[in-house]
Amino acid sequence: MRTLRFMIPIAVFVLIGWFLLKGLSRDPKLVPSPLINKPAPAFSLKVLDDTGHERNWSPDAMKGQVWLLNVWASWCAACQIEHPLLNQLARDKVVPIVGFAWKDRREDSVAWLARHGNPYATVISDFDGKAAIDWGVYGAPETFVIDQKGVIRYKQVGPFSPEIIRDELLPLLKKLQQGS
Image 1 (cartoon, rainbow, N blue to C red):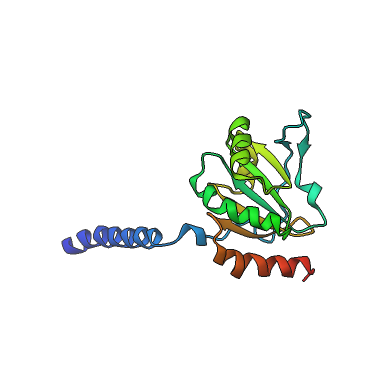
Image 2: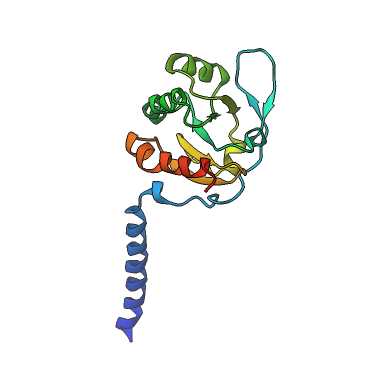
């Protein structure tokens, strides 16, 4: 009886330890977004431009087209890795890309785009990060593919690589643009 009293806590401890170790071995990039195949969350954010005119933008502006929402920031080192790939997608006119400057000061975002190029059809600013919460953003870069009906079809956590673009993004875009 006394042995059983000590064995139960040890067994519970081993079981909890096993679950913790199993969780540590998972790649957080492979955690599926609960937003996949759901309508994109609505928001209205200020456009980041140098025209001097303040205006807001919302995802409704893209209804009827397949597009990307790319979450980035000037302070994000990984964003610098994927940015040349986004510039190439924009040059090739593969898909409209909306830049989502996340938790970044306006002047830092503008300077960063001037230095690295601007692949975005529109750049919006979420300085306080509130809109990003609805999208499930927890880091930069993150990129979402939204279809013609405003439904999120894909989420890339972390920077794109040429292989991910070739093997995952481009086939998906082609399929969505063909209406399949």
